[in-house]
Length: 334
Ligand code: AHN
Ligand code: ZN
Image 1 (cartoon, rainbow, N blue to C red):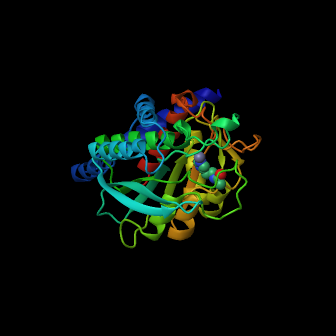
Image 2: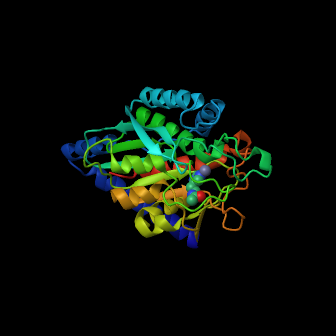
Image 3: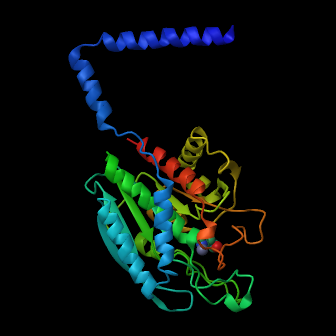
């Protein structure tokens, strides 16, 4: 009875909609059509493609500033963004590390519709950690990690989003920024004194020297550690504090798309990450989609800052859930 009622109701509604469209003047429907074709449909995110971009970065080796794999990977990322139709700026960002060393960091910025004021920002860090300070083997803690999940996963998803933007077109301005030297923060295994702001060095530099004067964006989304099998993304608390509306929108979109097993509506912890500086220094409301494991010792994935953060720590299903969700949010923006 109930089902019958629903079917009847849908048929009537459908008929009403068809009638009202049919009843419009030719000019009106033409205008309507123009508006519809102007707004591209949300593209389908290809997880195989994203996976291959993660694999490619990892194959260069650890992307630590002032090393060969780092400069080779910078060139690769720049060329990929250009191939996907972005206007690219490579920003030299000299920064000082926790140990006083100057790092020649590079922020890689891909712009779509650079002339538009109505813009959004998508970002990830592209460097990998210079030390495996959480590796179970103490002898291996001073060597750099591959950072397949921690670094390459977010960049891989954003490259696939860039490829899709280039194919489908987009009405708003979009900046995709790969920040450097996020993961050069004070190592945990050496018992060094606490020093603030040793993480996110490339982002801090960019916030103080944006690539365009008076740069701003409506909002920002940071992707960090977004590729591990069975990852769960909780609502990170700085994101909730600075960008509650965007946070809800992203999580609701993920739920609509059927990705509730990846996106939990529970609160996570506060995580110092690139989005904190974008919020505080640039006043761009920004969230962090980050795998955080409140029950683990480190608060993160078990391979976090170890030599096991390699391609076996990457799963296409997770890349798809995050990538499709971000694309959907992006294409629902006018
Ligand atoms: C801290 O551990 C302070 N922040 C985590 C940010 C991070 C490191 N993201 C990836 N690696
Ligand atoms: Zn890290």
